[in-house]
Image 1 (cartoon, rainbow, N blue to C red):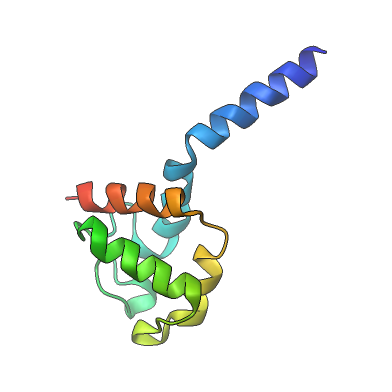
Image 2: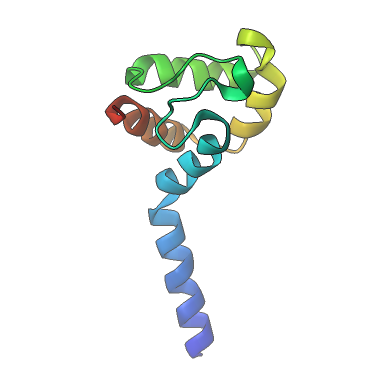
Length: 97
């Protein structure tokens, strides 16, 4: 019983910190603060406004955006993100300095 409760608590904590975990995946290419050109190709995303980030991530998710030839890579990265996840990421990116 204790294992079930502990597993539930861990799962809830993981869900609550989704946006931080989500940007951790982004940081691999974009840098911890969005300061890198991903794979030397993309724009630096530090401080992008929320609307620009949301539009870009939704475009990649839909497969309609292919900036700098990164469409396929980004589509795979954002495929499982919900609208709420995308909004959370947009807020984080807008707050980066």
